[in-house]
Amino acid sequence: MKEREPPSPLQLLKTSEPLPLTPTAEAARRQRVVENIDVLRANLHAEQQQRAARPFALAQTLASRSILASRSLLASQSSFAARGKWAVAAALPLAAELGVVLTQLRQSTTFECGRR
Amino acid sequence: MLIDALVAGHPRAGDVLYTRLIRVIEWSICRVLGQQSTEREDLVQATFEQVVTTLYRNTFARGCSLTSWAAALSSRLALTELRTRKRQRRHFGQPVEILDLPIAAQDRDAEAQAATRQALQQMRTALAEIHPDNAEVLVLRELSELELPEIAQLLNLSMTATYTRLSRGKKELAERLALLAEDRS
Image (tube, rainbow over all chains, first blue to last red; front, top):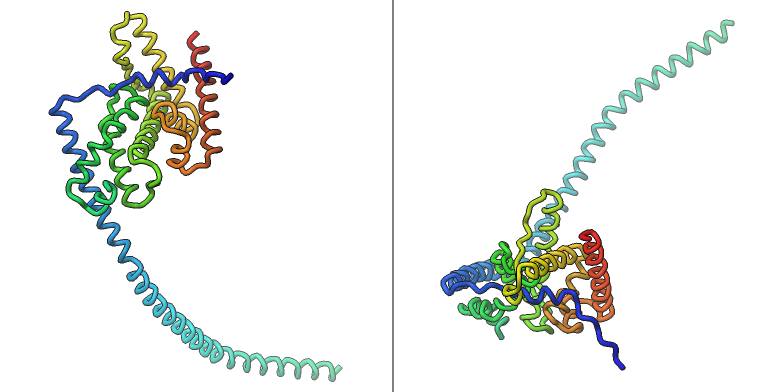
């Protein structure tokens, strides 16, 4: 024998019925809701069209971005090369100066040792 | 047919949609929140907006009926509102609960009416306290009287998950009601 399920306590809530609106209030609500639905539909339709056009726009954006990216890469490479040149140009006289100083220092040390 | 007309931009589709769904939306909101809910009109409007938006964005499960979809959306909104009311009452102490009375109980004596009001209030408090996922399935099954396979389809759940949520919801509700009755006594 199948056991009977006890009634749900939520059955009490089912006794709540919406209070009917007056015909005027109902007509006003219908008009307001339908107007809002129509506005929303227009917005969503525009959004859909925008979304449909998006792949083309995206492709264009990506293409322009790739051009920009390659340009900026070239620019950074050339600026790096220019900076390298300046660094070498500045370092060479310094290195030469350092070489002269070191040679002189070594000579004077040798002389001092020989005198002793 | 109506869905296609609506998405295609048919001028009378909004009006037809209102006629088709207003009853089920109103009943779902009323059963969760009560007859004299001040948010009734806002929730009706919000449900219609969600129905239209989901139809346009293809997030509506076409396997189920439009009325069931509307019932699911309005129940979810009503449950969210119920939980918001409860939070407001807890944090700000606002007397936002409107004690309505079912039409069937209106011809009873004052004592019986008071008891019915209190039972309704307790039921709504308990419903606001249980887990939202379980409450949703419980309301769709017990108040909107939808079948489990349809609820599973509406909420994009497996049958097992739907049944589990329903059982847990019933258990939680019974526990909450027992606690509330204990507090009262």
